[in-house]
Image (cartoon, rainbow, N blue to C red; front, side, top):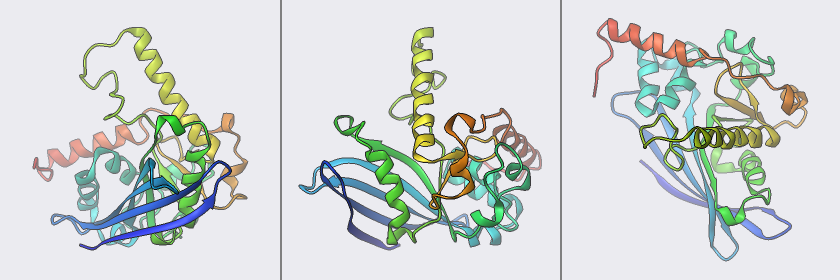
Length: 257
């Protein structure tokens, strides 16, 4: 396991100078051949005041290709349910986007070009301190990731734009009852997160929960208007994941750790 620190001045913003401080840890789970590297990137001012952070996971695509069948899905499931759902979008045989996903939604994402990144660069979370919100920092920070050498300058960023459950628990998460008005307000805030990512340049992958953004400003996805982006459709891929896991459990392959 290696730990390194990387600090680079990426952009001179109109109102301040902001920096990235990225700490990376290589990680390989004992029960899996799938390896990933997690980056905790702090966003700080020139006076070293932290105003936010981004949590990014890099999954090595070649490991997906090498992983066999059910082992690949279980390896993704070990990380989180979120990673399991992302894993279902990809074929474990070649680590590429499934054809059914490619052809769904706007059709803006093609398997061949997405596979050109040797890593899947996945944004697990981005949080900006409340006092600094509304200044374009989220837009700047996510675009700046494309130019970050320590992350291999990815061509594409992946994300599931939603509220973070540890900050704003979902109404069904068992954290007490919510009124109808509170539930409605929760979903409005959730929609605002999705709309923010769309304004930045992310577009939905197929009809799944996941979104992607291209580094190329002329990529076909950039021609898809915010209001013209594909909607989420139930069953893609959540229901398929659940059906697959039931099948695995039925064959006695899946164990509870």
